[in-house]
Length: 406
Image 1: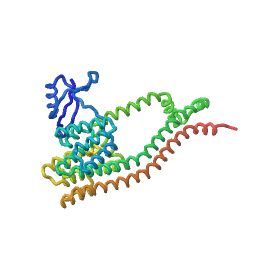
Image 2: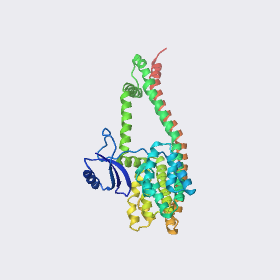
Image 3: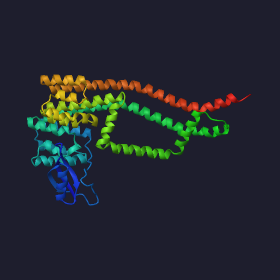
Image 4: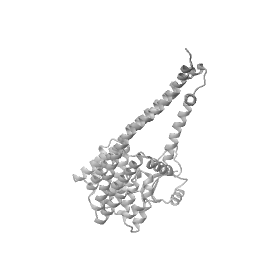
């Protein structure tokens, strides 16, 4: 049997997920063993042909970021105009063209209509929305400034998306250059070099070692390119699947931080994400400990998250925030000093925002430096590879001409 359940997770989130079990009693028992708290359960309307993995989670398509941003802007405008929340949601539904978003928003509207807080209605959809959004709404509901909190969240998303866009844009050119270089080398190795094999065979002379190595590699690649393509695609799929697991994501993200030149850029970007998220939550009136937990979960790099998570308990036990961050060995000394000043003066949210802006500037500077290095490095690499290929081809010819007597 298939069930749709509203559950509380061990880390404090409220999600609506699909599970399958023999009956409701077995479902409750299995959820309890996994540490879930069951709030609501109902039979799923899925057809028998659409089987679900036992106690597995349905991967629901996330709402596009741009559409979600437009929704937030329009909702804030309607609330500022004085419309009641339910009426504002109804107006939003009338203009919603994305069917997936429309169905989700309909569920949110129905929950609010039945008496659920707007923050809880969005939190029930789990990872469909940024985790920071329901928490921000909760702060707005407590303070009575829902419209102001939504606008603050919009500003946070714009800053975060702008930072991500700059990093991605800076990496596009190097990525294209690497792909084109690999493609050029593959064409020469698979199609150009083998054309000389018959010519070298007619020479009847011993070939230099470098020529033998290049011809062997080229012959293997040209004869087995379908197998190599399958291995490459299969390896990519396996790596992507492994990267979706907790252990795989942690290992890949740890490796990213150790990459020369690029690693420090990704490190600072992750810290900037954390500082900006925490600053937004604190400015919305959320206490430090829950804001700290949510901000950590918003960090994209799993390695940075794993280093920050043990410090939550230290802050919960009363240890100064800056001292807890220092034990993580992931924060820069400058950032810790600025956090300490903000904590002492009572302006932690403003200081965290300043830290994120400073880190963004460092990210941009280092990306420019990375770009200035990649192009000459790739040109040198390409020159070396092509030189090896040309030498391996022409060296036997020079040897033959040198031994020819006129």
